[in-house]
Length: 326
Image (cartoon, rainbow, N blue to C red; front, side, top):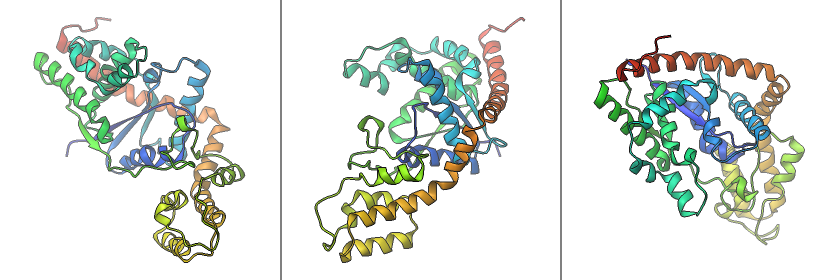
């Protein structure tokens, strides 16, 4: 059976929250059971908007720490920074010579920035080309994406097919691995959990700070004695993400029976969430205290990824008639 290799890009976007965990981190890590997964921290992509070098360094470390804390196994998985495999930007140039501007103008990210009246740099416009290079350079067979991100993989396939048409079967054609739709994770104000709304519950806060954050969840005016609908409760929506079916059923019954205030429900949420996060939190802080261990993991991952990337670029150069002579 042919080897299945998946590629996951990790945006270095700062302190992660439970919406990130359920929407992206957990599904990505599950691929360790079925694929040879490559995970890269997408630093070059982040440069399209992030211009603070210290924050960029912090965010890259945060991304690595998060995936390691939640179970990424560096012995069997490549975790690395995008910039540590310089062949990817070389391939982006080659691919850029085989794609017209029309498809780039139809890319979702470009259209969203244009429609919002934002100033658009070349990095934003050519974002799909670098993304295609990320995918193709590692001979990725599958790329896990949400339904709204399927276009990225389709564009990578189009570029690969265009190159293969001219030069022969050089690239593996990747398939999108559509992640199951995850229910929207609500923030403490009831809106979708998002850093831009300031309504997140982060993953690695100390228990005291975590509890304080949970106690800020917005509720309605029903009193302690009033029956409550668990299906209309942000507290219960979050509780369901981490509690067992038996725990969910028991708390739902307490909601409907009355006699339980929202403060008690928040305490139940805190206890189940704190228990879930305890081990990853400890692992996170252990690694944070030993950044040299994280650096060693990233370097090893880059070495493994670069071995594949170099072989791909050798095929690409030879096929296109631009082999290196030294």
